[in-house]
Amino acid sequence: MKKILVTGALGQIGSELTSKLREIYGSDNVIGTDIRKIDGQQEQGPFELVDVTDGKQLFDIAKRYEVDTIMHLAALLSAKAESFPKVAWDINMGGLVNALEVSKNLDLQFFTPSSIGAFGPTTPKDQTPQDTFQRPTTMYGVNKVAGELLCDYYYHRFNIDTRGVRFPGLISYVAPPGGGTTDYAVEIYYEAIKHNAYESYIAEGTYMDMMYMPDALNAIIKLMEADPSRLVHRNAFNISAISAQPGDFANAIRKHLPDFKLSYKVDPVRQQIAESWPNSIDSAAAANEWGFKADYDIDRMTKEMLEKVSTKFNVKQ
Ligand code: AKB
Image (cartoon, rainbow, N blue to C red):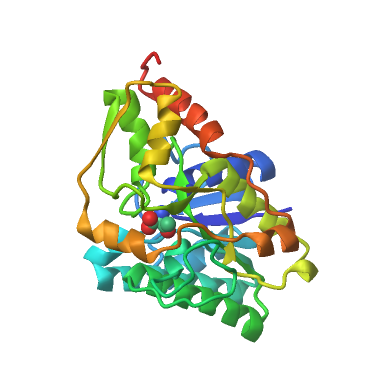
């Protein structure tokens, strides 16, 4: 029986992952932790306040609940990390090494996400291979590459069962992302429902990889349950579903809201980050080693996002 501790459990991935894990493994077997509480969101199962930069606190909670797995999600995203690089280093690297140390000391299975942010301007832009140049130019990217290597290190050096994927921009309607470069692809749906218009901070024609949250959650669970003997790469698997630029979202939205208007007011910081990332990535290694497959393309995701966001705001489409 699995017993899983999730850090960053109230974040964009964490809030949905925690609920899904509770459905699969039972509410009492999933311990949500976060640095904050949000009323009404931590009541569905065990929840503890944990600051991941405090290694002892994380260790004590993991030990008290006798968990066998850590899913470490707590992190600052790319744009926020660019505004506060030293804080990002402390949280992203300090939190990761603490979570890996807890896994080593208690012999836990370990998951943490890397990102398309681990690539940089010298990486091949289209169908970016699994193994390629990684010279990112952002603090977030530096953290992600170092994190990928650190997870490999804990596997080789201490035999910790570390696993991970490189997430593209994740699109969801439950909890908002915060401080990412790909956040526009979530905001566009909220603004489409509220105002039938969106002003994009990412320029027309800037492609990035994206994925709908249900595919991301399925990927985490499938990778964690995969037969270890099949894993050649353990950490940082490329996974991909949708390669899109702002106009592609607008066109998909117009199939449901024909008068939807998209305009642009480019944010130079996030635009520069976006331009340093791939247009699309090749997920063949994930498909071959553990059967990764995405179910949602942009049209299927858009239909569902518009329905769910309308329901959330009680708007009739
Ligand atoms: C971000 O934009 O920072 C994240 C990511 C791609 O890692 N969504």
